[in-house]
Image 1 (cartoon, rainbow, N blue to C red):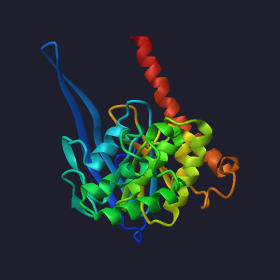
Image 2 (cartoon, one colour):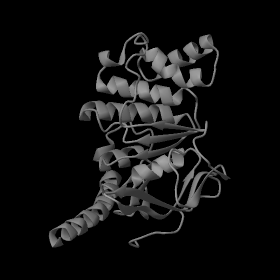
Image 3 (cartoon, helix red, strand yellow):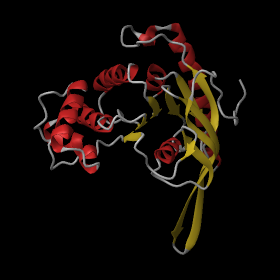
Image 4 (tube, rainbow, N blue to C red):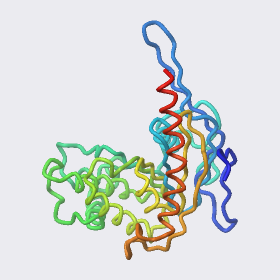
Length: 282
């Protein structure tokens, strides 16, 4: 396998491209003590994600994976290249995309129901209809009966379920997830992974999922995209050949899981060791 893959990933012709990232470059610039500073975060990223595909994005700390996700979400501008959804360039956030953040981001003064229906209220959906849809999605994420609870009355895992329901309530075509389970305990994390897979399995939604957890990346994805250490580029992507549904068996006991995990870990380890060498030289 080559060290770096700059070309855009190719997919079978029967799979329509949903998200297309072409030669994306991102620089962060700031002033400090009268001096101009610049950091190249992403350096010519090319990526395609097929409609209905679940793609995990992983890489060393500081590789730009969250930056890439936020660019696709339309939350931050970029300096070069383009991002297309269904072949059309994006110019900011869009209704076909929804973001789930690592921080729960709930309004502490609003009830669970009011938090979930907020995107519908913003879109001026009829109040009765907004309530109906929000309640339905709370049922889907296992929070039926908690509509009147306040966020501080919920566990971390339950709060993240509220965040997931809020993202799903507008029925987005693309779900963008930034380490959504990173702040919850290991056991709850596995339950949330299963819940996400169940919700996604029959939805037809396209998912771009950023994580630093290698096991999580392999467990969830059809394909794992590996970024280089900063400035971020696509190092490679690896297809996960494991049967679905993946909540029906112990996926981590499968030989294919171990092989894919090992292959990705070797790449990440190379970058980590290279970074340690640079730091020791300094």
